[in-house]
Image (cartoon, rainbow, N blue to C red; front, side):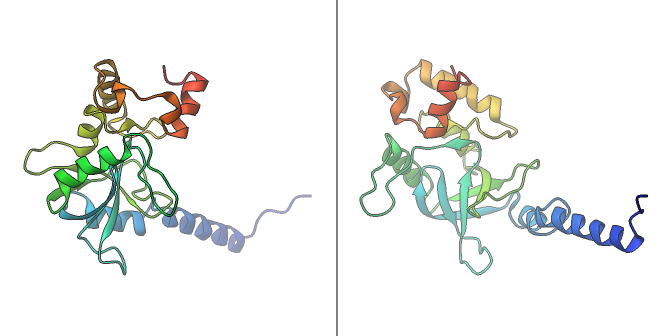
Length: 197
């Protein structure tokens, strides 16, 4: 005969479940704190690591700056470390962002439907240029400096894909002569699988 779980056991399981949900930011905690701290905030770009990754002048825990990763786009990588080489168009994307953002104000917008951090602790954000109102993520795809990242859902996924198709059709930026083997590994896999045409 099966015994019913005791009330004590159910309480322990319930608390553990709430703790896990809270740890993932579903209730309160880090995700809620990030939304309160960053959503709609204007800040200044202090360092550009890549076309889609840079630091802003907002403290992040013990760090003096917050690392931002543009959400929904993927710029080609630049070289980091000894012997590394930049991906095709990586330096051009980085130079574009450096020229247009370094030392300038931007406004952050977080996706309300996902955790605000990636596995590296970077803040995932759509970034707006206050002087023009343009979204940097969108501009990078439109100018052929970034791929529309199809791996994750977000509010602008279809918009970014449409802009990417137009840039590719018009051979803008990297689309003028990029070869499949020069694309990010995730995109090559999707092409081979027929997910992207």
